[in-house]
Every structure is written in C-alpha cells, then in structure tokens.
Figure 1 (cartoon, rainbow, N blue to C red):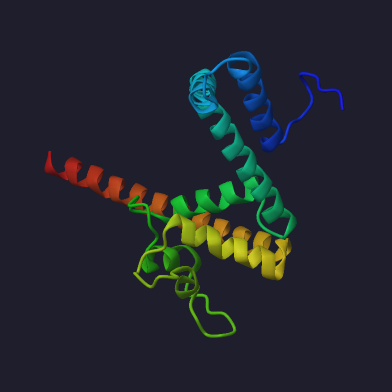
Figure 2: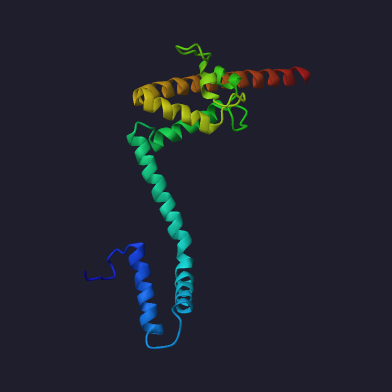
Amino acid sequence: MIYTLKTPLTKQEGLDAIFRIAYLTKVKGTELPLIPVLTEAMDKLVSTLSPGLGEFKEAQSKAAHRVQRNRDIAAGGLTDEQQAMVLELHSLVDEDGNGTVEKEELEAAVGDKRGKNKMSFFEKLDVDTDGHVEPLEFLKYFEDMSKERGKKAVEGLLGFVKKGVERLRLQRDKEKELEEGEAAEEEGTEE
C-alpha cells in the first residue's frame, strides 16, 4: 500500500510508524536503548498535538451529540424546533419564573386534564413526584409521547397547551388592567 498524507491510519499503524521512525533515526546502529527514545518521541508528539486536542475533543463531542439527536429524531423523537417550542411553553406556563412548573400553574393554563388512566396531566409530567416539573421532565414527556403516539399527537397537545397559555396571558392582562384602573380611580378620589 502507498501511504500519502491523506491516507487514514489505524491506531496500530500509527504506533508502528512512530516505533519504526524512532528506531531508524535514533537507535539503529547505536548502543542506545529503544525505550527512552520512544518516550522522548511520544512526549514530543503529545506536546505538538495537545494544543489542538481540546478543540478536537469538543468537535467530536458535538458530532456525537448531533448523530444521537438524528437517531432520536429518526426514532420518532422531537425535532430541535419542537424541543425549543416545548421548552418555551414550559417557561410560559412557569408564571412565577422559578424554573419549574407547579400544579397550580399548569392547571391555570390547561385545566385538570385526566387521561385514560385517570392521572392528571401534572402527575404524568412530574415523574419524580416532587411537586415541580423541571424543563427536562416536560421535554421527556413530549419526547416519549412523540415516540409512542406520533408527531401528530404531540403537535395537538402542544397546540392545546399553547392556546391555554395564550388564554391565561389574556386573562392576566385583563386582570392587570382592572387593577391599574382601580388604583387610578383610588388616586383620583383621594385628591
């Protein structure tokens, strides 16, 4: 086989090449032992490659994550856009902004919906039963639903939750306007 700079090498071929180069250039025809020469060659190799190694590992990690995401999507999981929508809905339902959704917040947005097994929507989402639905629990529920029941079921539920959040937002805006109007009237009567 003819090797070029673009020829992919296995790990074994790479190590063999380093050993041969070290032997031929430093040891052959001398009294020097091979091990210290190899150690020096490996140290030089590591010091040469180390600066770019962090970037390489980061790129490898991102590529592995992307491959896994593509597998998840192919297996019926949510697309990146759908995941972003689920997380956005979580933050919209999280009225107090503490990073988790409590039962009252969810029921204010969508009501007390119970499925075939009579579990409330909140109970299905709150997997660890701590009374709070973290973003990853919210996301996992929709991911699992997509894989088990299909994308149309997820889109329907997302639309339902989105409508509930919008209805709740309008209701809160009206309440705020009423409170501001009452406060303005009180200020007007005090003068």
